[in-house]
Image (cartoon, rainbow, N blue to C red; front, side, top):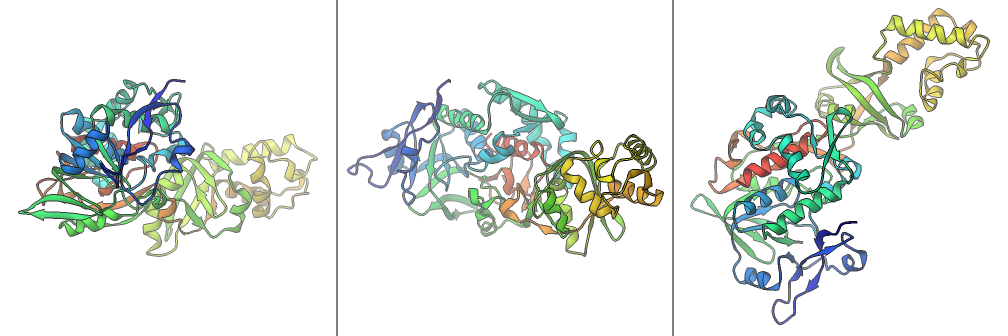
Length: 468
């Protein structure tokens, strides 16, 4: 196994810097060994730098070219790019480590981008706000992101649905690459450092205020994310800051969120994953959305890519009244063809009971639920199933109804919809139109795309542009 550039810890002598812990860069095989991590105090600021000398100099002179607030994907990329261009950069993170939310993306595998190189097609996935991304994508689209990681030893692999994952690694390899890039740029990092506000003078930010110090910089980039998955530190802190700085915040709501349903039978299908199914969303008899792909049943309702991609619309529509989800388990067959398929199966199973005739049509765990919903006696021989009963079965497989009652909320949301109003941000620079030395990148912006690597790509692209 190759050694990675990772963190180790040592306490600076009390005589020189009693309140600081230095995280020096070393080569180690394992990230954050427990014997080291458990000794990290939670109530003292942590500083990562090249060595004690740099940290002590920083304590005496907290002045930088660029201060990046937030150590997620967008923040790390912004800091990396700025340092690569020669800037003296500090990265401020309120957690004890970087990339906490990044580490759980793609169930730990990290779907780090989407294999779509056409800027317009990529931007369209972000809906009405997608055009805002044109400049950022033109500078650093998926092709550049794939090349960026591959040139640093992490080759991408395109999987189903054009999702791009590390070929042989996982999310840790993506994080390690970014950390090494930070080291190469000699970026100073403040951990356990919560921002409490900003100081403004003459239409510019002069300092970012922390609990234990003030940091001065020529340029400030806010990349603190939204409110999704707050257990990783994304608690929406940045919204209050930017409003105090005079920016408009579009009210944040959960996006890419699991959906709760009222049907009790979904519990019987918990953990059942379905592929190549169609899901339609209706309100007042009118179709509002439609998706095709994978979904998952849970103990509370439904989840999976097509459900989560639809969740923002479900949440918005529920404010105006009830909605229905219609699941088509056999979208490749119309009603007539599916009926003929069932007739062939019944012919093959002549003389056998109904509950044993559906094994070629449905996942085993789903058969008892469909039988119950069909109203057909499970012990009834298929020879005696009427056309009316068969027709009901066909409609059940083509139009299985689910009744959403709400979303699971920010705690289980992958991204946030809403954020800093884009009309107040220059899309060519990510700079504020209100404060000349303030910039934004990542999820804090009013941008959200579907699952499949789109939202991480938005972080890479806007972070890269903001760091220019």
